[in-house]
Image 1: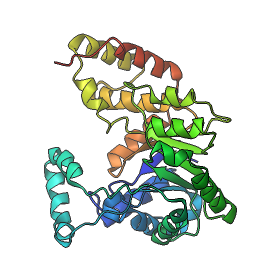
Image 2: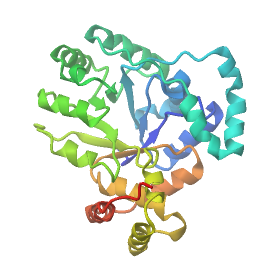
Image 3: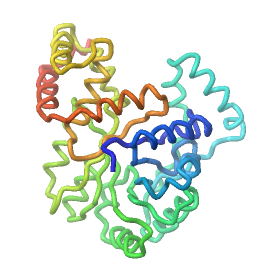
Image 4: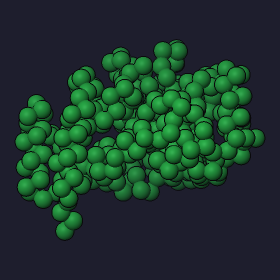
Length: 310
């Protein structure tokens, strides 16, 4: 299992099928073996496109998909206009945030234990596989993950061999509810940023055994913008810190954040979008660096002095 995971949220929406297939093939060839997907990703197309892209190599990878948020209803007009939108974003990268905000996200319907196997079977059909390595609650309510009936339904799927591991993918509050209720997910997935200390909070929960941590969002969560908005004195300290750790001056902000992600989760998995070849290579370079928790500690200490909110 690779320590870096390929996030498929844009596969089929911002990223076309052809570009997605090429990106997934590159990632496989470079040793990436964890792929994260969900029914609503890629306007509802990501699972199917991921399955097609993996083909016979499916047996060599870990697939995590989710349940609880439905596929979005995308109008015919939106589907027709999607290639034009991709072209516009490629020409004007600043439009990417606008496109992301306008993308259909599906409905968070809540989770009835009797529906879970139906959710799973549809994901298996879309992916073209007969099992999932990891099956995750998708942004659940705390009451859902604490439910004994829901846990029993998931364990039944493990017994049947249709899933191999149970996960909670959502906010720390939902993960905490699972721990407090004595539920024991195999994997927990959540956004981690040097500004919020989420990973430390998850580690402190009353686990019988600590689950595998799958963290994400260190770039896309707004942390990069917050770094760039810090006062000059703090940015100067951070840049000097990055140089001391051998980080190139021209990309010290994103690379420092990615190094933080791996340093703060040294035994887990870090999820990232890497459809562009340059992003894949940059992420793999950071993943190949031996994670040092001292890096995360010092990085957070510099940030702890406050931000310029003006």
